[in-house]
Length: 170
Image 1 (cartoon, rainbow, N blue to C red):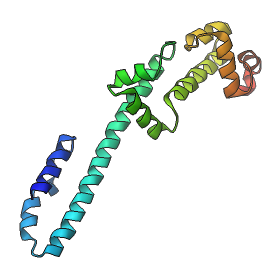
Image 2 (image 1 turned 180 degrees about the horizontal axis):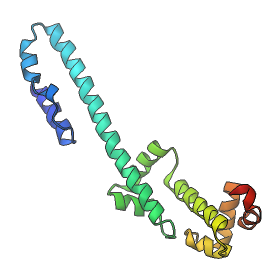
Image 3 (image 1 turned 135 degrees about the vertical axis):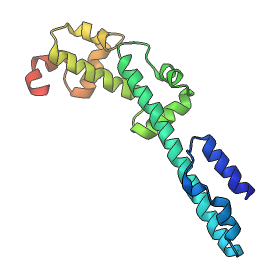
Image 4 (image 1 turned 30 degrees about the vertical axis):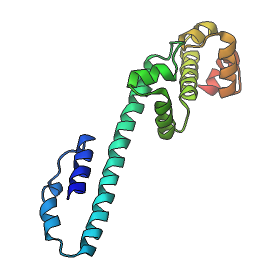
């Protein structure tokens, strides 16, 4: 009973809301008649609590990743945008944040930033007549030559060639 109460308290502290099925838990325990029934019930109870903990952690992880994605989108032009800045924003250590971000998105934070910068650059190349150097700065690249290199990596063409052929690529 004490272990059950400890598990329940732990899960509630993590954010589990009260549910009616938890109301009669101790009444149910009191009705168990054999050691085998206690073992069977306890294994099922622990399994259920572990699943609830997993779901709670997943929900919290999703919120951190969602906050990070919004932060990246809103700060894509910042040349200093990096994992440390983002992890500070969401309130996690850089190492832990990088781990959960990769687990959720299947991509490293730095690669995700680059991908978003390049996608934004692609949109600007398709929809504006701004100079390529301006676009490079607008999406947070430190130099036009590095921008060209990364753009080429993603699209197989330079930004200039992309713009010339934008009808086929936008």
